[in-house]
Amino acid sequence: MDVTSSEPITLNGACHCGAVRFTATLPYGLATARRCNCSLCRMRGAVAVTALVDGGLTVTAGEEFLATYQFNTKVAEHHFCTSCGIYTHHKRRGNPNEYGVNVACLEGLSPFDFPEVTVNEGRVHPKDASAPDYDPVAGWLRFQANR
Image 1: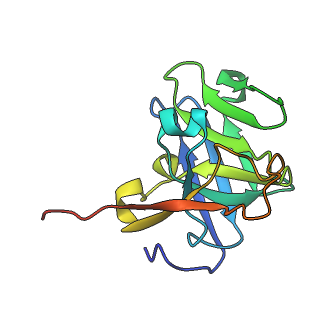
Image 2 (image 1 turned 45 degrees about the vertical axis):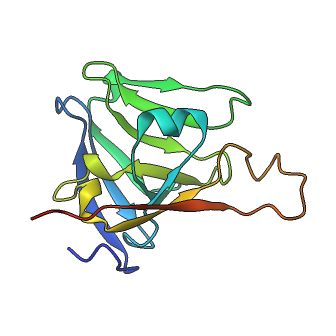
Image 3 (image 1 turned 60 degrees about the vertical axis):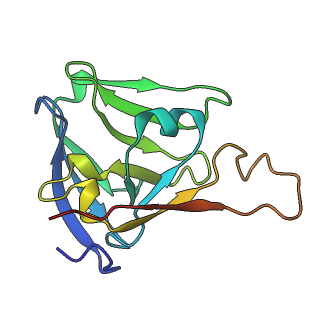
């Protein structure tokens, strides 16, 4: 699978234990893969790709196992499986019309398939940034397999 493709793609996904299953349509393909350096994302460590809230993600099984975590401004909604604890997706604070979908939950994909992932500046959220020199990119995370 071409992880640099911006062609729309629909993939099935699931949490670790399989209790939560979903279908995600990624209108911009896998080219939107990114991480964030906010306090939650630093600890979570996931690579996320973009789906639209309006029809872009459908939970096909286990909706009763999904729980939501919110913090700080309580705008973003972080969803995870109550059985295995795996984060599946979140509604973004920066754009509440988008979901970030955990790449590791998508069938046939791994975060290690991406040789380089942009890291967004989340320690200072763009909606909070007052400095005129705000840069939304904090850096890049690179993976190089040794085999």
